[in-house]
Length: 156
Image (cartoon, rainbow, N blue to C red; front, side, top):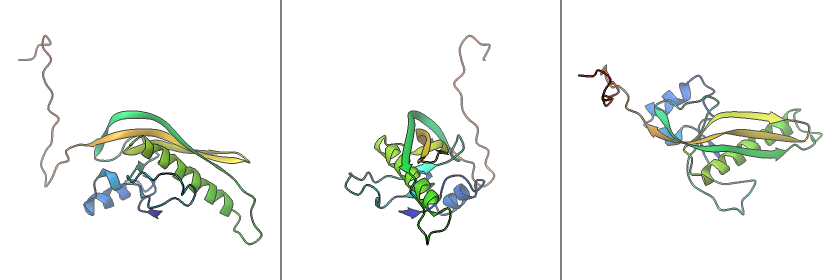
C-alpha cells in the first residue's frame, strides 16, 4: 500500500496538489498495490478517493452505491510498542477493508468517512459513490451551467 493522500483532511490542499500534478479524481486517495491483511482474496485494481466531507473537489456524485465498512479487531500492545501502535494499526486495517469493499462495488470514492471503536474493534465506514468530473474554469474563463428551459414557466 502506497499512500498518496489520506482523504480530504488537508483542507483541500491534497486535491489542489493532485490537480497540479495532472491527476484526475481517480487518484485523490490511496493507491493500493497489495493486501497485507487478505492477500488470498482477489485484488481489484482501482483507486478510491476517501474523504470525511460530502463532496470531492472537481467532481459531482453521479450514483450512490451504499454504505461500505471495514472492521478490524484491536490487539494487545506489546512491551516494545508505542502506546497507540495497536490502535493505529487497527484503524489502518479497518480503512483498508472499507476501501476494498468500495472497490468491489466499483466506487470512485467513499464520502462521509468516519471511524468508530470500542475496546474490541475499530470500524471505518462511509458512503460509496460513483463520480463524474465537472468543468472547471481556466485562465479567467467563466463557466456557467446550461439548463434546458422548462416549458410553461414563463421562459421566452
